[in-house]
Length: 323
Image (cartoon, rainbow, N blue to C red; front, top):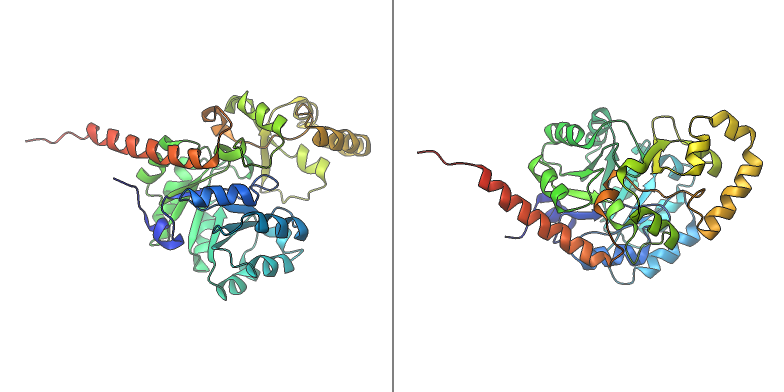
């Protein structure tokens, strides 16, 4: 039997699978591929580049798409929300910051409002605005996140969300994770790492290869890459990436990195341009263990769903009817 949840009804999708709007990775082609496969692909609005956003929306073609923004960064360029809304996205996802200034503008359109949270307190705050979907993100996720683990956070958010669909995020990269999220009461999953090495992803090919050759054991959280990129991230959130020479050198010495920022910035920018993953960032989460090859996004969506169906069917065998 196909899996259908309230998330499918709210977003008008076939499968309860959302693409995480990974900055610089989730472009229009990847978003379109996920949407055409029955999920909802989301373009990563990142730190706000109007030209890039226009380009990637165009590359999505006629596919339904959502778009995600880093909320504290969007507050510095609020006109980017209007730019995105002009293209009638199916959804807008806000993460990391005060959503209040943007809710009314989104509500004036047909776009559904998704809000990603990392704590129960943040979830309660988002629910007070009447959001359409809550994304509960655990610390296992790649990219920026908080300190709480996916399993207990999702369960706690489900308990307070009422009729609002909750989407689980963080460490979910195969159908077993989707099945587990559904048994927690979530209505779907948001996946980034599962699609990082996909054919349509915008990550550098060397970064994809590095991701595929490592496991979740090789990831680390820290702020070194925010410092070197000049991103003034609030202290509540840090970044999970693959561990490499750069993180080994600077993760425990942020003051030293700031002192050497000029020469290190040159080194970082050169490495990023040529795909030197000893220095450049490979932004994936603990679920990278479950990603074994670079393949079309449509195949990833299909496998997520089929594996979840099998896992849920198998789980029923553990329930013994007495009498």
